[in-house]
Image 1 (cartoon, rainbow, N blue to C red):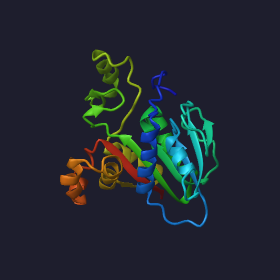
Image 2: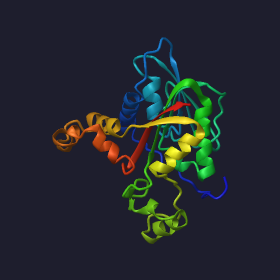
Image 3: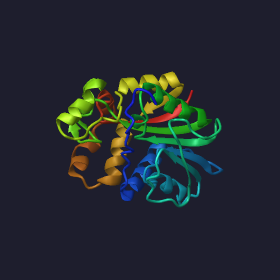
Length: 245
């Protein structure tokens, strides 16, 4: 890949309990309709393998799961097929999958061309009625999640590694988060329909991860959807349901 750091790190989340809960949230947000046959599901960038394992071993038995990644960081391997890949290209035929998942992957694949290729490959392998899930950190989040450094992704790209070194958090910034506007422009250019799931995702996160949170039970639970829609460009994690146009 050109014009991107050569020492890109996978940044895989390896806590399986967290990954299984993430699988539950993704299932809820996908809102899959009933099916009379098993669905073929692809997870791009499987990391620890928890999300793939969640669907592969789902009690409904309704998923045949493939997973790919550029490194093998899996902590669980049962129930699904795994393929190592080199770059954004996917080793599958056109219109292969009913469900595709890209969970915090696109910010790691490389420069703008590689990010466009990632989206194009997701669309290519989706069947005409397929549903996709895509999540990534918002460029305008206050604290960058991979390095825990405030304002890191706010700077122009050429300044970010210097900011990282200034605070002694690393030598080279190897991620490329996008703003809501940038990501949606890229999705549209790729031929993907998208729906941002800001309110639904927040509810799923609290109800699955922190159902007893006072912040949730006494305040956030009662915020109407239209209020969240006004904040959608500032939400720290951008989450979308995708379909082919």
